[in-house]
Structure formats: structure tokens, C-alpha cells
Length: 483
Image (tube, rainbow, N blue to C red; front, side):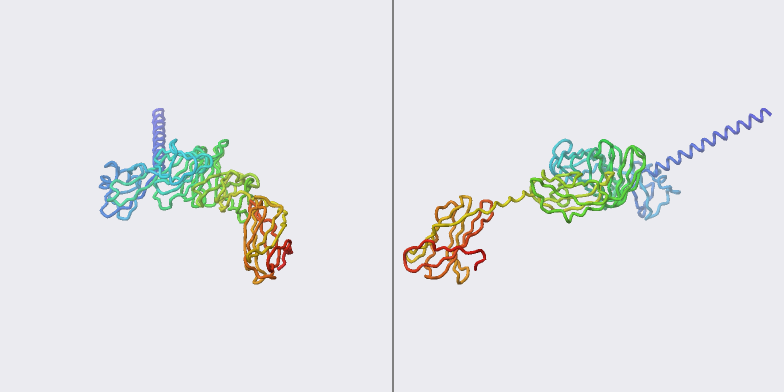
């Protein structure tokens, strides 16, 4: 009995050990499958004559890498692959090289690797870029995607690589791109190239989040150092937003945004606020106050206002959050600009944009009150057959300009003579030439101030003299509106 009990006990122990071994093997296998599922890969379309073992000689780094491709694709018989069949090739089996981006726009203080950046400058892997206050830059990645760096932003191109199968020309394979940009401070707006072939999603990383691009146009911001929150807003397409501190994620689609709080696991996805209505906003913004009224928008607790010299907002000169009823444009130089406005909800998520062309100008000077003035000591004389009209004025000075015009009553408004004089001229003289005696004429006097404002005009009527000599007081005032 004792021996039998020992044998049964031993068998149970062996069974237990074997079961544990099987479980361990099972979980190792599951782990390997999970790793394989997470392994980035690119598709390869099998061509006539392709054999997996033979492909290794010119497509993969090592001659035995075909075995890994077979396992990765769960091929029952690695010797049997058919034209048109798509094989997934693990990314680490592809040749890669650094892919260089470039700066296509700068405004203000923009630094690349600690030195002033210029349009056309190459941006390699590891390239660090920084924009100062009231400054911006646009970087075009090697796959054609464009990233706009808003003011006070610090970012690094961590990964920028192109992948291709060896002897790509012979196999007809495509170059694939992998890119990652690390945002240490500020905000980025990304327009991903729809036509690019991606070995891995284009990713924007912050200290507390990772946003992978499956869409085309989105924003990522890490501009709240107190909470270390990150946020993303999707204007077009779809992104996957990972809260790396909490190992959680959420899909964020077009018209949605999400706040990623490193202390909170759940990611709440919300609808973006609608674009504000700027139809009632004034075109002219007058200095020195230069206050531009904000629109009303349901759900908005404040507004983001950006000012740029171009409608595409590549050159952003001001970026401000407005918490009052007006945006302050007093620091914006005089000239024509584009203003972009979007609402911000209570959680900090920013909505869709509206854009309006505006003009920042000095307020026109307040017109001075009309200067009271009059004429006197007028004399009409005849000399050598010409009639000469003379008069003086009271109330004007050197800052005024007088234009005196004499016209005939009939035919109406036929000009006879005209003279221009400064307001401090002691006497104004007009040679009227030969006039028909007894005919009525009109004298029109207009005065312009130094600031361009007009002074109340004066109009008089007189009758041409007969014979010779002179007469005083011939000018008779005309009432306004008298024909």
C-alpha cells in the first residue's frame, strides 16, 4: 500500500509538472504571437517565379530570414507561395536609411540645433527645432507631411527613416516611411500626406502621450506644465491617442478631441466646438486701443486667436488665448493680416477654426472744427482791358490753402480764372481777362486745413465793370444753395 501510494503521488506530481510546462509553453507561444502581431510590417506582393527561400538572397539581410517570414505569415508550406499573394515582411528585415526633412517656412525667432534656421535647411533624425514668442515654422518631413510649429514650441524629429526591400528596383517594391516627432513644449498642427506609404504610423509624442496618425489633419499640444496634460484635436481623419502614463488609449475621429491626463486612466473623447461666426467682426482694427471683439459661441469659455501674414497660416506672428470680450491687437504691426479664431471648451479642447482678413491701422484724426473766416477789402478794377479782382481774408493762417475760382453764370460753371494762395497771403489777385460789362459772375472760395479737412466754403457774386477805373465792395455774399 505504501509503495502504491508513493507511485500514485509521484504520477500526480509528474502530471502537475507537465501541466505547468504546457501552460508555460502556451503562454510563451501566446506572447510570441502577440509580439508578432505588434511587430511592424509592410506588404510584399508575390511575383511569378518568386520562391521564399530564393527571395532571401536578394530581399532580406540574411539567407535564413525566409524562415522568420514563413513563421510571421503562418505559412503551412514555405515552398508554396503564389503570384498575387501578399506576404507581410517584418520591418526589421528591411534595409533602412535616414530620411531628411526640410524647413519650408520660418517667421521670427526659429532655431535648428541651436542656430538660426533658414528656409531650405535640412532637418535630419535628431534635429531639434524651437520657435520663440511671436514666431512659427513649417517643417516638411521626408514623406511630404507638414508640421506647423506654433509660437513657443520645442520639438525633435526623433525618427525619420525610409525602408525598402533589398534590390527594390528588381522586386518592384515601394519605399516606406517611419516617423516620430517628440513635442517637449508648445503645440503642433500636422497635415499628414495621404499618399505616403507608412511602415509605422506617423507619431507625435509628448512626455505623457503618444498620438499615432491614421488621419490627415490634427493638432497635438503639451502646453500645460502644471498638470502635464496633453491634448489632441482631429480636424480630418482618425488618430489613436495613447495615455502612456496609464497604458490606455482612445480612437479620436474627425470633429473630436481628447484630453490625456497622466493621472487619469479613462480618456474622454468629446466633440469639437463649431467654428465661430466672424461675419459681424470688423475689418478695421483701430490703434491705439486695437481691441477686436470676440464672437459668441455656445460651449466656449475662451478663444484661441492667431494672426498670420498668409491665409495658410505658415507665418504666425501672434498666438493668444483671449479670456475677455476682446482680443488685443495693439502689438500687431500696422497692415493687412489674417486672423484665425477657434473656441476653447472648459476642459481646454480647441474647436474648429474661422478665418477673417483684417486690417490694423491708426485711427483717422478727429476733424478740427471749421475755422471761421471772411474776406474783405475787395476791389474790381479795369486795367489795359483786363478786369482784376483783388481781396484780402481774415481768420486763416499758413496751415490753410485757399483756392479761388471765378465762373460765369451763363453758360453755367464756365471757369474764367483760378488762383491758389496760402492762408497767410496778405492779398489775393485774379486776372479775369476781358469780360463783358454788366455780366454776372461768381467767386467760389474753398479752404483746406493741413490735416486735409475742408473749411466751410464762401461764395460771392459780382458784375463785370464797364469802362475803366475801379470800385470797392462789389462782391455780394451768396446764400448756401443759391444757384
